[in-house]
Image 1 (cartoon, rainbow over the protein chains, first blue to last red):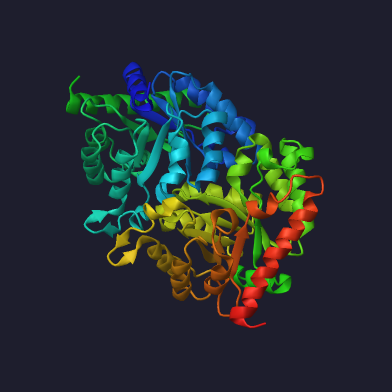
Image 2: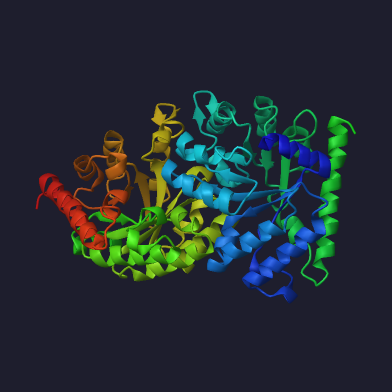
Length: 274
Length: 274
C-alpha cells in the first residue's frame, strides 16, 4: 500500500486528523517527572498512552532529542516503539544533503528509527530527496511554505509570477511517482494553503502552526483537506502537551487533545458532510 | 575575536586552506579496524593525528554519525575533542527550523558539541538562522549554491534577473552584524563562485565538491579566496580519507592531504603572491 493510501486508512479508522507534536522540552515537563532524558521518555509514554485513540499520529522534532545528547537517540527509539503500529510517526528532521549523504539520513531515519514519514528540506533539489522517496511505503513531506515569520524571507520570492514555494509544490507533484510525497504548509497562511490544495488535490499536507503559533483551525480544515475531508495532518504541539505540569497532567493532555480532535471533526462535518 | 578573524588567524598560522571531511563510513574503513562505531572513532583519531599540522580544520557531516545510532553521538563528541583547539571543527548539519526549534539545534551543536562552526539551510529565513548567529564566536555557513546536480532544481531559479542563490548571498551580507556568517558554494560552479566572491569580498566561503565530485582545485583557489588568498575553506573528504584500506592507511592519508595542501599553496602563490 502506498503511503498516501495508508494515511487515508489511518485517518478513516481513527476518525481523526490530529497529530500531536512531541517536542518535549525537559524544562517544561510536569515538575514531578524531573528533567532528565528518562523524564522525557516517561512524559512521551504517558502522552501517547493518554491520546493514542484520539490521533492519526505523532510528530517528533529531532532537535528536541539531539538537544539531549547521546541519550536523545535512545529516547527517540523508545518513543517511536511506544506508538501503536497502526498510527503514523513523523520524524520532523528537515534534512537535506547531497545524494550520498542523504542516503545516510534516509537510512538512519527510515530504516533504523523506522519513522513512518519524515520532513525534508527541498532546497538542494531532487538528488537530495530521492533517497527518501525510495522508501516507497514511507511518507516524505517537503517544506513548501513554513509557519514561521522567516517564511517571507526566501519562500515568497517571485520566480516570474510564481512564488518560490509553488515551485516546490509543482516539483512534488512531478516527483510523486511512488505516491508518497507530501508538503509542509503552515497553518498561518490560510490563503496560500487553499491555493496549494487546489494545485495538489490529493497529496498529504502536514500542517503545523496551530496553537502557540496562531494558525486558525477552521481555515486549516476547510482549505487543507482533500474533497473527502481527509489528507490534512494537523499538527498541534505545545498547546496540547504542556496543558498541565501537575501529576495528573496526562488527563489534562487527553482532555485538550479530545477538544482539538472534536473541533476538527466539527469543521469536517461543516465543510465535507458528516 | 569574531569568527571571521579567528578563521583568518588559523589559516595564516597553519598556512593551509585545506579542511578534511570526516564523513567516515563503516563500510569503507581500513579492513583491520572493523565496522563498529568504535572503528569509526579509531579511524577519525588516526586521520586527525596524521593530518593536524596540514589543515585549517575538519568537517563532520552529521548524517554519517546519526547513521551509527545512539553510539554515533558519542563518536561525534569524542572526535571533536580529539581535534586540537587551535583548529576549526565544522558541524555539517544543514539544519533549519522555526526559531524555538532552531534554538535547540544551536544549543546541541554549538553549546553541547562545541563545534566551531555549522552549516545551516537558510530556506526558512532569518528566524531560523538567528539562534545560530547569536553564538558570536562561532561560524554559520549558509547553503547558497551547493555542489550537487540537484542545485539546479531550485537554487538557480531566477527571481527577476537574479538567481535565487544570490538572494542568500545578499541576505548573508545584510545579516552579518556579528561578523560570523559564511556561505557554502560548491567547487563544481567556478563561474558562480567568482561572482559570489565579488559580492562578498571578505566573508568565509566553505567550498565542498573537490575530489570525487569533480570540482577544479585551481579555480577554487583563484575564485574562492579573498584578496589575500585566504577565507576559502576548501573541503576534501573521500579522496583523502579513503586513500588506502591497509594497516598503514594513516601514512597514505597524510601523503594525500599534504599533496592537496601543497597544490593549494601553489595556486595561492600563483594568484596572490608568495
